[in-house]
Image (tube, rainbow, N blue to C red; front, top):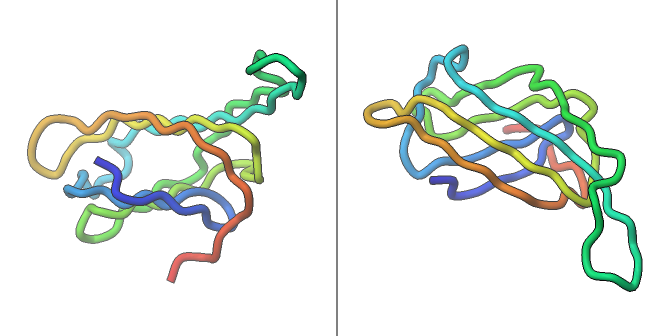
Length: 109
């Protein structure tokens, strides 16, 4: 389960409660972003939706922190991040997060 999610200058950093496999080549991640049309009505269809390539996946040595470098990463009203990754020990870890990126964060320490 994700414990935290932060932006970096070129992507996202996700911390998990339990370790995932450190072999990043076995990880499957997707990232898409879109805008919304502001109106008096609640909600709107996705506007200017893009699927972004995941350029790199770096997994910490303890398997708890995954840093993603995402092509054309920028602030956006809406995004979806999905993952299907092997756990270090146990069943696969699958999930989805929707959010907003207001600003890009600091580089990893």
